[in-house]
Image (cartoon, rainbow, N blue to C red; front, side, top):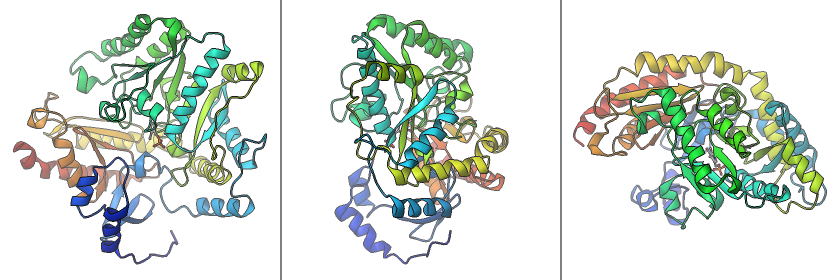
Length: 462
Ligand SMILES: *Cc1c(COP(=O)(O)O)cnc(C)c1O
């Protein structure tokens, strides 16, 4: 919060952005036509500022990650102190530094139960790559080398590396790079509103879980290594599965001895009102991918939580697990993550999300958005929310006869009106910092509502 406000030459930065920089997940022609990206120069709390002088409420916590909000001096201090003492050391040479050991101990305490070890990486994608290699290695050690197949879900998101894209179910990503790699299967997602509108939720939950069992039987249980899923799909459009889905999925995994992987990269660290999303659903994964909220995005770090029975196998059989990254267990990143978790504990951000702000957001959605003529559904869990835009109230019919036309219109209006949200197809999603206040939640809902009103004539003309 005490950072000096620097005077940037925004026009020159935008010119250089086009001349030399390729932003991530972007249409590079579009960015060039726009004359460069919107330049975000600073932020504090839940508010980001762009170079044109706009203050924007950050309804996305950066990219689902800045859980403790911006401008935390003590996180900067933790990085500063660690950099002076030991900025970097590796964990390859039978060595480790204090921060990753302390962080592993802390995360193990939060996972609880049968998960007491973690393996560090730098990103969520890398965490899933680690899981991919670890799981296949595990089954070989177990003497069941035929167990190679991973089952994921259509529209799941597990990152942008080769294994991440392959495990994920984003068809547009598969189309680039000839993915998925062999040995990965995808089944239906538990998206009641989009894919099974009007179906009884309990029936749908059972049907969506059954799709996993059907696939296991089709490819042969002896060939299946693991099932992977996000407790709530984030990038897929904040798809909150109906009650009963996750326990049914867990039971199917147990029935066939298949490992259960929860990708907690968004749901972890308080987002759903528990430390981890699987705790909300009452299931026990064998492996957990976590990233984003682990350091609130202040530095890149991710981790894989590994169940005791898998660790026991690694230790009993011995031999190198020939996997790891230069930055596995990075001391500075780990030091910042430790302090970040301390802030979350001290400010009770998990409890606050569960008991206060999460229910407040849900009520604001129900009272002030659900009745809007363009809103087909306004759903949330903890501080993860989604608003479905529909052409006809009481249906899931989309504007312009296909998905993806209305979302960008409403999203752009929200940003113009001072709220950063994301449009995923025709679903506007939000994921604000966990420090968001009631007043800021009201503001978020106000801007959404106003933007929907303003969008009405544009959408009707689609
Ligand atoms: C963001 C995300 C990832 C990928 O994390 P990166 O740090 O971008 O590699 C993986 N899984 C889920 C659920 C995510 O939301």
